[in-house]
Image 1 (cartoon, rainbow, N blue to C red):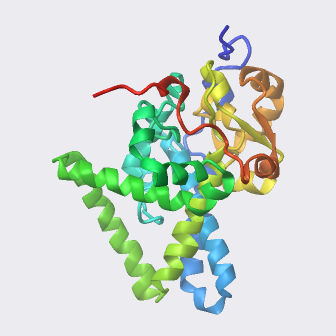
Image 2: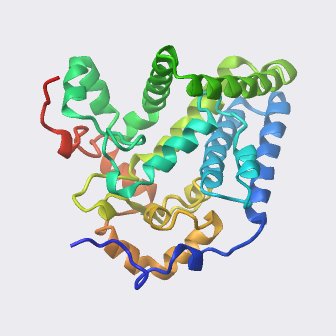
Length: 317
């Protein structure tokens, strides 16, 4: 029996969302993130390297959370304005337009975790698994542990993404090429600011900002989804995480976001507390007590079998 939340249990998205022409909380957040980015890169030489490293990674991950927010129609009613807020490529490697396109596909909840239908799935089909060979399988298995996801996970994610994008462009995908051309203009501006005007070493930005930021984002996504026969039970909740809750704009309470993706980030904690019992019943009790609990369970143990249960049979070409 499906546990999908209905209007009889959880109010509709329009009822849960406060309709505002401009959501000033998100505007303020964007100003803080971009302002801190410019400030940190400008004054980096006056700060200890460890501070630059930590704050840089935090800001890149926070910016990714902001991009996620604007993808879902915030903070204004204008998609053009929202996209302009999310477009600057501070992470360098991920074009906002591709992130937007693939993330909205990810929100087809009936396909969550499916390695063919869900662009954000971490699972493999049996054919893909067998094609990796022993070294690839070992790498993929390590990447299913939390420590693996935080250490090699960003590299695996970025390299795979760039390789797939290169293949698409080489096959003649003009739309993809256009997206990347616009993206590289943004990358040129960010690079000019960071490396030429602020004179920051390339290694510091790539490791402290880009890689560490990607690792923090991988922490958020690590336990968000797990295969279950009922698609509502594939989305987790990580409670009691005040610091990371702010970093992830409360998407640690992920089941509420998937049930009502248009709810703005600053209303999620209140609504989660109000409807907690309903949400936990709906997702089958897939709840973690903070990211310490996630680490206790999965730091060195796989989160799940990397082979998707519905694609566990080899299909000959």
